[in-house]
Length: 582
Image 1: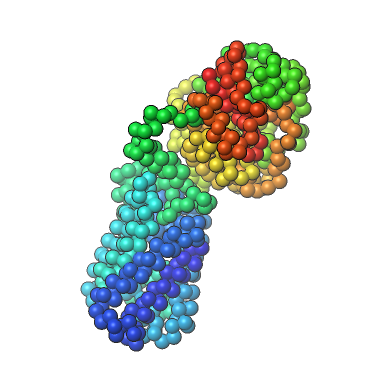
Image 2: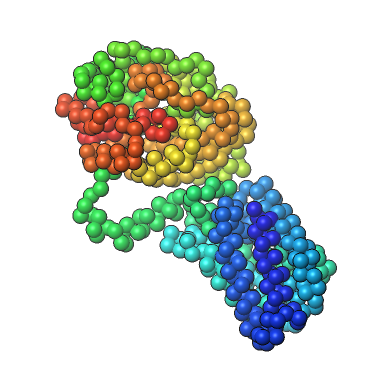
């Protein structure tokens, strides 16, 4: 894609260059002013740049088509090392091939001294002036890109601003440096023309200018304000970079609400999910499960109830249900354990793997991974991971995080996780002697992360707070799945722990959730979400075609479990969400 983008740019440069400057061109005879023709060239190439950036290829690759831009984003930590190598190689190859093709198509007009393969060389003002011009143009371009692409109000205009700068640069600076600010663009013409005058300028000045601009930007706003390396970010296209653009989109929604919608909307509160309260699991023996979680993982048992009746049967979709329910707490978070006294459900399939779609776990934060692992070993827990794994430094969004998967007595997957200083919530970094701190998130395996995002982000109002693409030996041994390659999106609501969506890009052999899975089966997980107005929210759910287990909102007048109304909802993969209203 990057090769084709610079190829198109160079084909356009050669074509418009021959049309506007070749002495035998009819346009030259009609438009005699060199300034007018230079302005037309600027407009033509500016429009070309906009079209490339906004093309499907440009939206997918990020539309750098310039090694200096790619290297700058690499130094900003947004592009991986290997992507940087492949991007730059593609840019050089694509540009050179385009000029070779143009030379064949345009015959002698491109090689004529008046066009000279649109080479970029210092003009009459000399090398110093060309060097200064290239640094200035590169710095201004990168400043404009960073300021606009990382602004919730201006991000959608980045391509047009780049196009305008290209047009202005060609008009003002092509008579000084030839206008390059792109080493691959200079080499593309130079290879065919055999002209390398001042080559060092076009390799050093663009990179120095862009790096300087990036450094000034970081000093003024901080590294967190670089969200992605794309010039035009289409959320419908997958992103190859270390991307946090979804956070910028969320920021824009907040700004738009505060500046435009707040006055009218505040008068009409909208029903919404206000927090993730509590993940829950079905256990075979409540007393044994409580003993494990309180003695091994330091949870506190804060309440136990036994419930039955038609309301609970309807809510859970289990006829004749009688349940014992315990609420456990760790730090500020909770976990709910449910034993079905009747009817008893099925055990977790013994061959369950981390990439099966019924996989769900909670991530328990620990203050010291070595101590936590030693303690769990002493308690003879059942392993999932081969041992604690620390994610590698190349994975910028997850680098330094260490984790270990294991199982509770019923076979439910659990994770202990430790965050380095630059990751995780502030509360996980407070000085403490406590080993097990709380629940950071619950994670579920999904088949299609974009489809799940439409459910959790667009329907249930979760906010995207991070993403990463995990693969390699550490991830394989963490999941204990050979060849594991995951796309991960982290979500949070207004309160409570977060939720992670895990899509296994490979191996794609994970099994779907059984259609007959019931709330009394031990493989069953249920995530409780708090809703401000459940009756109103049901209308939104029904209009979206969501799978509601019961016929509607179920009333629980005694509120034994802490809520009076509830609804069981299935996500696109069959994971259960219990929506409650207190």
